[in-house]
Length: 387
Image 1 (tube, rainbow, N blue to C red):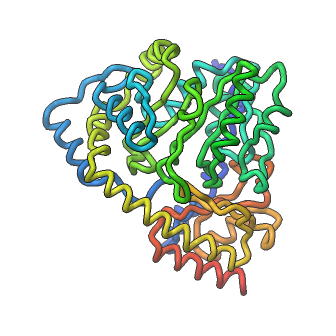
Image 2: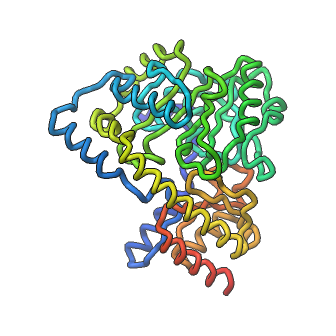
């Protein structure tokens, strides 16, 4: 007997880019050499001190379940990191360690999203953000946020779009796919406007460690009621380890603990013990060198893309993406990305996954690849576009 699947699945779209990735894998199986500029993860992996810490944890048998909130030493290390990096006193009791930033967002939405209610977010934005809202039967409400607003929401947009069915906003700073941040003043205005209306603000800061043009800044410096999501995947280069964290108001920690116990018991114990080494001075020095390399790549690729004729209306100040207008070359970014793949052997991502506002005109280009490969990719694009 066949059973009908849950209706919430109708509101969760597949990743369109996966079709492109299948095409890329097929070309590589035929011997084609591709340059990957589509993937959303650092090309650097965990530094040796982190791997050594994982090895010690396994050798010592520290492999059992941990507290659902995380290993106390790691929660304290994250607290100390906020003090050292941002000058913020965030008690470890407000920190919840999760199985990646995805689990952090899962917990936040489970706790805060009410079925049928709206959560505002910018268009473009990372598709999973809106899909997590949909998974808990909320209504992800995308607001077109163009380059004149750094592809981010503004206080005015939030005020205009907020109605009696709206319960919160979900932001990312720096953002995937755009690499742009919200200014502290604008973010402060948004948080105040949302609070005034009795709503919640979730800020995804998983790329906050990779900001290049200003001092490190966290939304936690603006208001203790903000829910912040972070991760060991991007700045800390631990993508496959699946480890992240939430910072939440003290009063909702028991509710999140209850949810975490039921939804995933705990984050990986090995990953948690390994992550303690992330905060050692020698490891931070490695991360800062890698961050400088990401900045060097950005400073190469942005002018290179502009020279080729792409529109880059906002210089990305964080992450490792450039959101580029390809309308000079095509009125269909998806077809353009496939042409670039097939004819130039360069993998880029069309705007289709990130929301309708820029679906046809923009592509996301990742510079999480070596500078030599980026230079070769630009050379291939030049031949294609100037032919």
